[in-house]
Image (cartoon, rainbow, N blue to C red):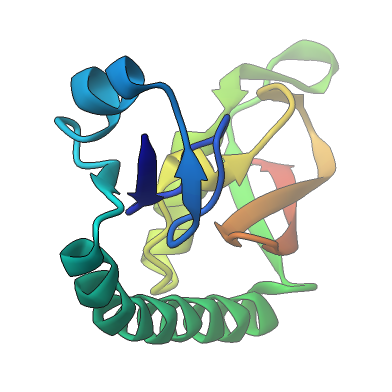
Length: 148
């Protein structure tokens, strides 16, 4: 069965593509979940009209992400934490802490988009990547300092 993908499906393709899949896969999974529509003449015409809207929306999201990336790139943020002997932190600094710090600066970023290999457990300066959109990332520096 030929279907038109309404959303990106990792194993099949991107939104807007027309692909051929097994009938059962289309009827039982893709179409009920709203991931695809049957590629008949009516749906093809309707999707051509909708495609322009989807492309414009994607471009708008991309440009907003690039603006935020330009503002964030190369900036340094400081987090003060209590430390014990040998400058070890009580606890750690994680993505939630970094997300709260960015929210305080006016950037609403989902904590799932903050890439931190492992929680920060020592004083120092650490690079942190932030995924803003497909292909758009920004890198900030987080300085963990002793609380005075």
